[in-house]
Amino acid sequence: MLIMTIRKVFCLMAVVVLVGCRLAYAGSGTWQIGLDFNYTSGDYGTGNDTDITYVPVTIRRYFPKGDLSLIIPYISIKSTKEVTIVGGNPNKIRQTSRTTRKTEDGLGDILVQGRYYVLEETDTLPLVGITGNIKLPTADEDKGLGTGELDAGFGFEFSKNFSDSWQAYFDIGYTFVGDPPGTDLRNQWYFDIGAGYYLAPELLVSACYEESRALVAGEDNPRDLFFALNYDFSSEIEFTAGLLLGLSDGAPDYGFTGGIRFRF
Image (cartoon, rainbow, N blue to C red; front, side, top):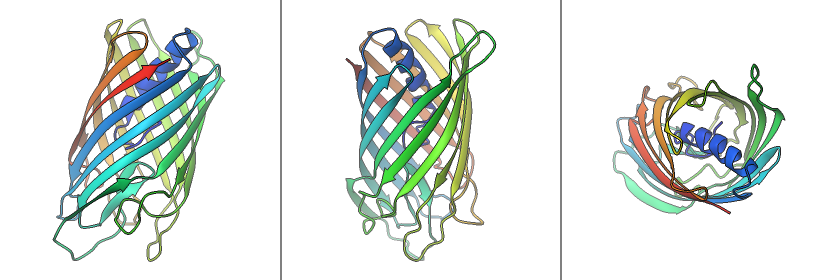
């Protein structure tokens, strides 16, 4: 159920959407604006660390059967340009002989993402949604902030509440990745699976496992664990926080995130 971007940030957004939809349907507001701060660091098997700061503003409109989001990110990358952002996710796209890191920053790739629920949750069946997304190549390719190519993808989401306290979710999808000049990037499948538990009506903790296909043949698939915390300060304001632990050379070594969302 990822709607964002960096994807390693990640399962947190799966929970945010699930909780947000409940509140929207309950009449707390059909619009949501969110601001997140995401930081990841790792060498992605290159021997050179890449530090990424990703700060997206998300504007979301809820509908009775789904939602539509516009994500406008600011990105800062300190790297040797071996790793860049593809569809909101850090991915290794090339190997270089550079050892000196340089910091570049600016507008990232704008993302448009939508979701439509085809099956409502029942006592025995999960909530099922179909997702679609388009990455607009607005990031500066020369700075290493993106590939400069258009990407598009689709996916399926499943979520189920097992009691007043427990919920589980699973998400699988496929992205058609554009190739920048001089590269041969593979299209990317991905999935994540996780569970959440309400410590209190307004406080949710969750954990998930994520994996996606490496864009470059022969590289490790990005794999990670993500732990998240969601706190509803009120029916209109929500705070989120999370911690990422990388499990492969294809993923960041670690990362953390924090955010705030307003519903109206």
